[in-house]
Length: 403
Image (cartoon, rainbow, N blue to C red; front, side, top):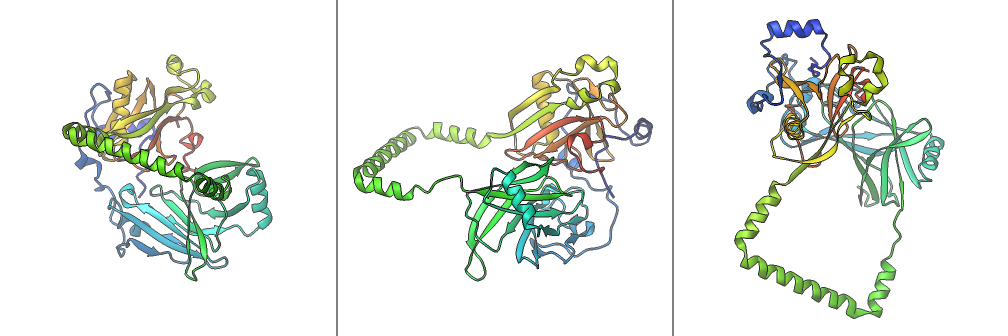
């Protein structure tokens, strides 16, 4: 059963839910209280499904690459990472999907088979378009609704001579960057050096490319020559660093209390990024409730991308609530027992249905649109939270769920 957020129910269904679902009245950001954590994790509304053997931390993918909803349910909300290993028989390339169990709240069937592009000419064309990249590979991911934002690690059967690789896809004949890629070099089963490329997956249902090359020159030889000609340079530098370290150590010993306080402060500094925008309204101005025109910024930005602190355990809802309160931005939300989460109805006086029957607020984290409420998604360091107003059921802001 799909538990997609309740952002686009028709007005009639909303009224019916208010009458029968026990939802309270609308409240604004001055009245909102934090959601009890015991409520946010509830999955009591998920129907019983067929029994499945619990997934392990490491799992071999079946030939079709499909992990069923029932199987995904066995790791929903669980701590730790769960890996799914597959192999492309024709090329010998192996790959691993990595999911965080805690990010899975509404389990769905996952199609994890990766099909690699065999048209070398096509890959070469993409490499030329990507600033003449020296290495590249293409692959296709099946269309699905992702249960969580996974990472994908692809292990080649060769070593790439590259220090920079990006994930991209072709848009109007031009490579569009989607993510940076982590490069690891290791020895394969036959002691042959191979390259593993790891990256976040925030979109599926298309053909994607990994392209890269060398961006740094190898200066080892030059450095070694300089060190041989000036051996004192390295020695003096080392001594200087040791002296500085010693001074720091003395300072630490003399101020244990201050150091402890500094440590506590450092440990509490957890940050994420949040932004709020409604630029889609500018493209659908004729559909806007004219009484709301004054609340639409000329460039569509209600809150530019801002780095904010958060406390571990806080949710996307908590961060939005606090930012709106501190910035003087109006926000209206309602708790929906059916979904065990707060539902954000309006921000900056712009509500659902104010710009058409398919309009309302949606949120994404690191470019992924979660399939559960904002007060169920716990924030992690470095998360990029985006609140965006949609006029087309999410399609105009990048959500693939309803496509």
